Amino acid sequence: MTLYPHTNVCDLLQQLPIAAGVLNKMGVPDAAIIRCDTLGDIAEIVKLNLTELQAAIDQLVGTAYEPKTFEGIDGIGHLLERLRHEHHQILTQHLPQISDLMKEMSRHHGHESIVWDELHLSFAQYRAALSEHILREQDELFPYIEQLLLVRSRGVASGIDEEQLLRNGESLCRILEMDEDSGFLNQIELQLADGAPHDSDMVRTRLRHQIEELRYRADQHESLETDHLLPLVLRLESEVFRSLKAH
Image (tube, rainbow, N blue to C red; front, side, top):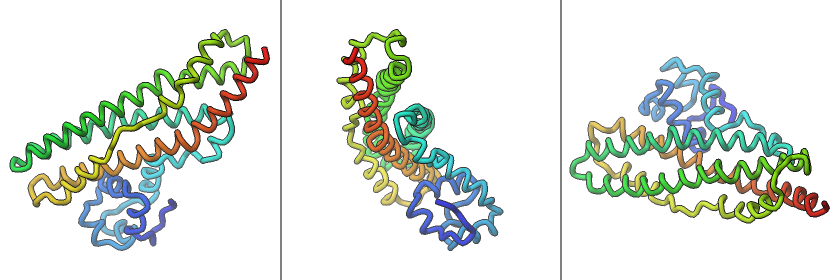
């Protein structure tokens, strides 16, 4: 989404909920976001640089990667690079930060501590499942895809065990599947909305924005895999396996 001074803030947040967190990180408080109609209004109040805001949002959502970059088997390498970047952001930033913020919410809200402890336990289980899924992709799936690309480019000269490669292909769809229910994220958001005002409101705001960013990244991650990676790899497998069987 291209930003202009006349861009309506409500429209921006409706299309990109994560923009609220980006604005906060650039020094724009929630109060300013609520009372301003356009990005130009905010820029006048807090000296916001729209070019920097655009760059920050583009980096977050990954618009630097044009869809055409992923077209065709030759684009798989770019797609794997993008997915590794998304994995790094999820594992090293969003998951740990959400965990820390939920612990802080539990400490601040003594009368709700049991609820927050239960939510934190559910999140810990989801974090473990998502981390395992990501690591399996990086340790098993991505190397398998890179081996396919190597065989495609070098043929029998690649030195790769062709029979093992064929056997590994059977686990592709299983690795890509992610069945863990993230519905409890809705429970966290409801708890944030229903909670009484408290001195932890800043923590509440940061947690809400982190959850929005995680949800967005998870959706983007799933789309990249199901809409781009899987169809391309199936084409790659068909081409490579047909070539191997011909020999």
